[in-house]
Structures are given as C-alpha cells and as structure tokens.
Length: 130
Image (cartoon, rainbow, N blue to C red):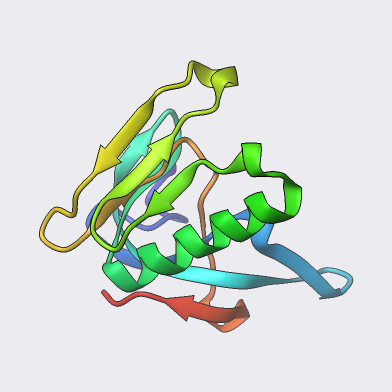
C-alpha cells in the first residue's frame, strides 16, 4: 500500500493518469496525454482504487476504446453507455464481465492498473471534478 507521505490519502482528490498515457517532449520530463480527477477509495493489491465522475468516466472509456481501435478490437475491455460501465476481463486473467452503476454519481475504477497521481499541469487535458 502506498504510504501517506508521498501518495494521496484515502478520501482525498487528486489527478491520476497511467504510464501508458505518458510521453517525454524532452528527455527526463514526463507529460501525460490525459489526467482524470478522482477520489481515492483505497487500494487493491497495491494499486489505487478510484472514484470518477461522469465526465472523467466518459473520457476514460473513450481513451480505452481508442487504444483498442489502434491495437486491435480484441483489446476492447471497457464500454460505457453514459450510465452503465461494463468491464470485460481478458481471458488471460479469467474472463468475465462486470457491470457498474454510479454510486452517488461516481464510478469505481482501478482494475489492478498502475494508476499514479500526477501534477495536473503536466497533463494535456484533465477530466472530472472533485
């Protein structure tokens, strides 16, 4: 579990992104194509679990789908119809489908991905509200 001296505490809000959204415009300086404002719910297997609002969830689903279109349709693991979030687990991790409705207008994500808190000024775009 991350320690509170360098990671956001449970219940706090921060901007998160993933290494897959990182690029270096100059060596040694990281930027992120997108960041998602989220509330820390806790941790699962050492990775953050987060709550996103509708705006951030829409942007995240579009990003995942764009990556799947680029890599191949079999990489499509997320669908969002504007209300229900559907997450398909790849066969390599057991398969199955999970559907999530918002809880108080926020969607729980994490999915064991290595989300990391980032400086919002290092993001090209930031989605979501506290």
